[in-house]
Picture 1 (cartoon, rainbow, N blue to C red):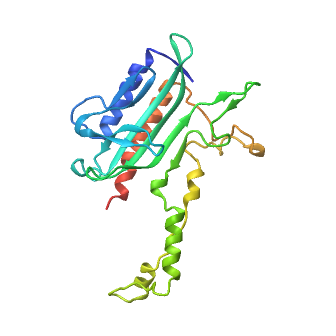
Picture 2 (picture 1 turned 60 degrees about the horizontal axis):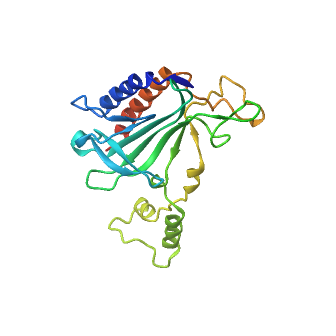
Length: 244
């Protein structure tokens, strides 16, 4: 997908307006910065904090007012990267939205991301997507959201130990089961890409060839802007459901 360099400024403004909406920003201060051909979340005073990605990179994340603005527990960081094709035309490269969890006095850890990477082209002109068969765009659950193998093995040791019976005031069956609950190893899900736009109902995916109906790139910069708006509003709508 290609666009004019001059379109990026208005594109950024449109995304920033939706980001300010979901973050309940009282002032229309920019929550995004544009550094050459990279658009990303910026330091916006009380609305942001510095966080570390799952890959160890530092970035700014802006708070969602969930459960409320004074006790924010969820933070969003985002980026969008373009590359020059000519002096006036740029090509979309990739973008991503990362969700962090942690109150102001806690370390915020990355637990989920939404990614979209444009394909490259092989010698015969066919598109090649990152991850070969992986969906683009796709959701990805990160290690901080999962129980790892160490926790799983530790739970097995507790369950099989001779003195593993928990000390409970309530000795009902349900209470005992709760105290002896097995922790499952779900670390395998780190390798999965969960498609965010799989059109399997529209196109037949023959012989598992790639690219498949779950792989696409934005049709134009306006479509990418609408995708950002929907993604941000979806996070802001769904997350309050998990907060007691």
